[in-house]
Length: 115
Image 1 (cartoon, rainbow, N blue to C red):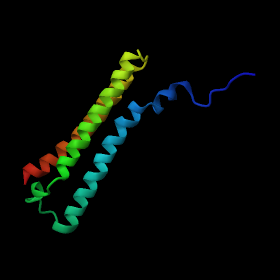
Image 2: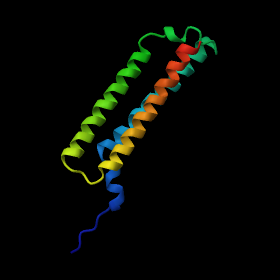
Image 3: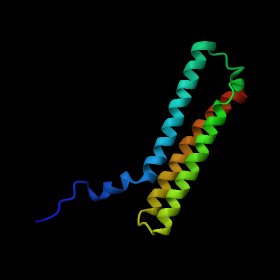
Image 4: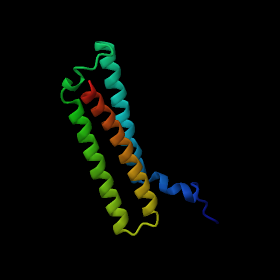
């Protein structure tokens, strides 16, 4: 009897923790940023001059970014030590995920500094 793989071989790598972490963290940061801006606009309107005084929220977003970089660094180190054949692909996904998170943080920081 022949064993049939249910997943396409090219899709196997999509379930690795590296890929999940690469896109979950930026999506979480983006969702929180949308919530944060939405609640600010609902309460304060479009007046962002006191936006930098919002407190711990930006620090929490930075902590999430640091956890993302650390977790993905561990996943990449494990793949490198294990000589994973798709290391270049993982590195590209990790880089894109970190870049997306950085862009969300940069947008928030620019809002704080610009007004």
